[in-house]
Length: 396
Image (tube, rainbow, N blue to C red; front, side, top):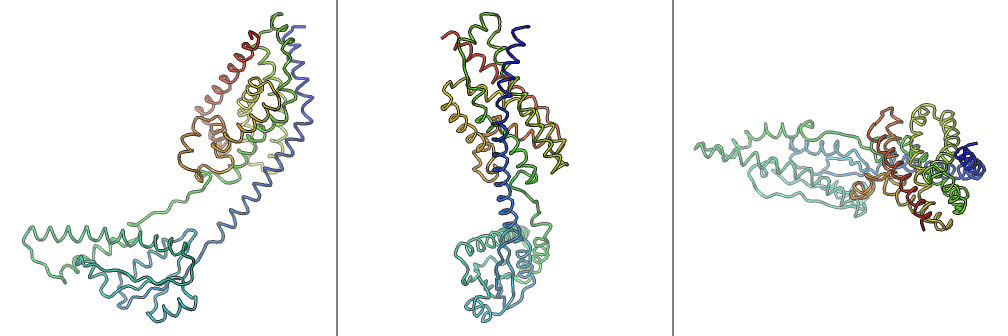
């Protein structure tokens, strides 16, 4: 029988003997990942369904219609985690409400607020605090100040531009005329469609929560299985390997035989996971099968690390640190939207990030040829690097 076939059968037999320990490790990893995902999903669901609500008293003696429009817009715009409920009351009611805890904050609008703003006069809103935490108050004041500031800035630009335009044409205008000309602008400015638009964003890059962590779980399980595969991957028998090379079995084929044996075992385990997905989440079954290609760089990375580091204990430790680091930078544990923006540029070239994005696209039935080619390219580079290390060991 051909020496190459014998070598592959021996490598496959050694890999198959490691399957029981791989199954145990896979069960443990799946249990841990599912447990963490359930906890995270529960926290996220509770966080989404429990927005903070605060009562705001607004004191406006003259009941100006345009000020009322501003306040109504504020109440409708604030629809995130902090929800404001605005009540228009008189000054004494606002103070009593603050003292008794019915209101968290009160805004007192001065007389002739709109007219003074139109005429360029300095006017301020009196803010009274209640019993709400200082951090909450700071967020509320900041949000409302931003909205009010935008109104004032846009209004001033329009008012002063209009006044300058009329002055350049020697048209004399009084206060009443200025107000009359400015009111249509304010009416247009305070229309909601001219102020903002809504766009819902998710921390998982607009990918459903379950889909995102299913892709993460599949990749992470097989990466961590490399720790369980140490018995197969770290048994270096240099004398036997040199004899095989002397008999015509090159280092390239030796590495390919090990790669093929590991890929065969991982394919069997991947099939088991796919059947589990079919049983519990059938809508993701096709996407899971299409994501099979991620096993290629995973197997390539594992044989590279164990070939690079001959000591088994050191190889396991290095592999664990490498998986944790690459996983963190790639958004395995926390979505990149929750991490510093600089991490996004660091993760772009990582194979773990490419695998995650490819798997996500497969789950939504979108095939990305560029990511597919990048996965194959990384696999080829890892195999070539492993062959170079094996040849270096032969010459040493």
